[in-house]
Image 1: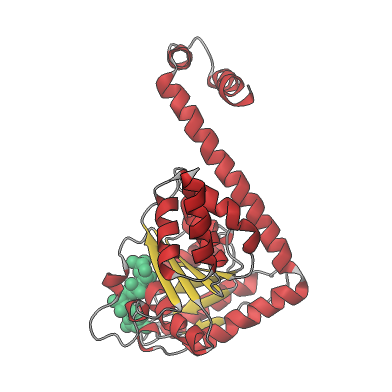
Image 2: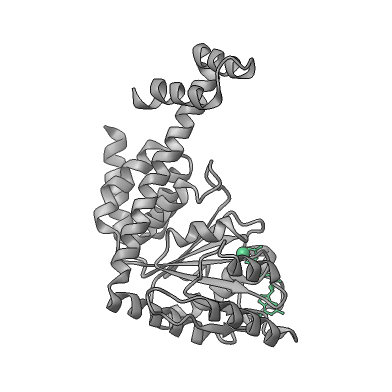
Length: 320
Ligand SMILES: Nc1nc2c(ncn2[C@@H]2O[C@H](COP(=O)(O)OP(=O)(O)OP(=O)(O)O)[C@@H](O)[C@H]2O)c(=O)[nH]1
Ligand SMILES: [Mg+2]
């Protein structure tokens, strides 16, 4: 009971926008403390107000720098911002080379900005359950914008699409893999494409390639994906990025597709959590239950085929 009382007051402090309460809540969630789940349960009805904006793209293209610069732009409009950086191979420090004019770390002292990075990804390689819970908590804490950074080509990009209202894909001159992934349909077409490091001489070539890929695709919602050039390290083009994010927001609100996206995202969130719990339960069964171990041994001895064994496993540990 003491825990419940504690989480209730934490919830109040969090709703009041207290930075330390948010930090504490995230730590509870990260450490898989039941109080964290309880807190999300309590606060969930207060979520749904923030814009959830996903940033993805290959390592080192400048996502963190871009988010840092965009945060400055959003702050000018007095929006409260939370940044959640997932699975960063490098924490913010690597991007924040001395001499860069705009850095994410510049915002650490701003009470209207909350920045957190989470190292882990989920057991299935998707965005971790914890990360999604953290995004909800940031939303409940009254942030106007929750900016989520994921790194990678392929899976990470697919993942984030499942959890954001607006997807920004950051590329740089030479991001050939991402172009291939877009072309092959491995990666869904994002809502906004940024070609960062526009100070690079190959920028025009990159923009042309992106335009070529987009010409082949038709957005079913009727949104025309803008291709922006930015130089995040100097803040160039970031105002336009903020404007395009606004425009996309208005577009999906007016077209009614925001509600659709959110319904789809929440559905995949529920299924994602259920799936990873089921998998955990099965793995536990395999490691702890002698009968299950024996079942697998029979497959190894070719006495039982894998599909039948899987059926028995499910029947015993999931269906029952
Ligand atoms: N020349 C140039 N360098 C940039 C620009 N924007 C960012 N950088 C630099 O690119 C490097 C990587 O930037 P990050 O912001 O850390 O990139 P990231 O995509 O977040 O990297 P990961 O999180 O490791 O995938 C840093 O050294 C930045 O200073 C730019 O517009 N031009
Ligand atoms: Mg980064």
